[in-house]
Length: 374
Image (cartoon, rainbow, N blue to C red; front, top):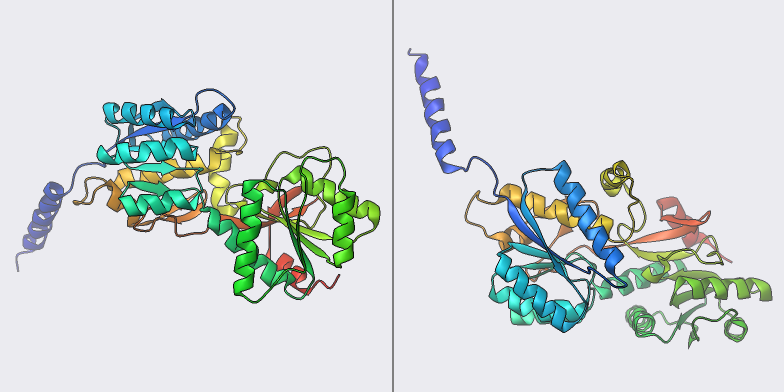
């Protein structure tokens, strides 16, 4: 038997593979359209920092990073889209505001450039993107997902307790509470009391009296962190035993008044530490930065695009197909985009206020909340 034949066959197969596959992945040219000035500049800085840190730790995936200015107006969106098209980027990340994103999407789609937003949650933008065939990917959670998670938590923990839904009159608070109410109604669960309140007050005596009169013990608040803290303080002053839940608006800097321990919040993934974002948080810490604001979502976007870059050139799939055809391990947890570019995962987690800060709700927390009788 000729022992050299198997080795010659192996060498022939390896030679074929070496000609069929590129020597290395294709690097992506990434556009970052972020606020360069104004009230949202800090968030733009977060995106820039996250991409710079990930790129420094993972060289060779991005050929270039080109920046554009997101002024959060239709005009700035159109200008940024034109600049990105002229630069010939492969994909754009950013467009933090609905107005600029909506103006840019049709222009960039015409240029064959997909867009990934980190912040825009409005369901309507995804519906329009699907209807018109825009190249749209949403890493931010959909607005409807927040209401779904909140309604599920109320059903799990408060179904046998008298509860109230209250909101601050702002569009975001009113829409969140109404969406929660509708979802609970679909489960044949109705609140004992529904009301609104004036935000920004130093006290809320009349609201708490109405809650007391209604006999509720649980309150879902569609409003800001500071307002919930005022309501909780007033309830304590009047001797009304209330437990609270709120949405992602509770992820805000602590004010003069603390949130009561035990407050439940539906927070966007990345707002509270979890095992999936430990590496990202350490990467920021190594550069003297705290993982806050948009740093974790932007880092996750860099991870996704880095994974895509590693697969570019291996086969005929284009960038859109690669984004929509895989589950990515990121600092936000698993991320999967459907055929319309919407993230399949809800993008929110349940958290509980404990000793001055939020932490993720544990199995033991859930069991205790389900068994509470007060």
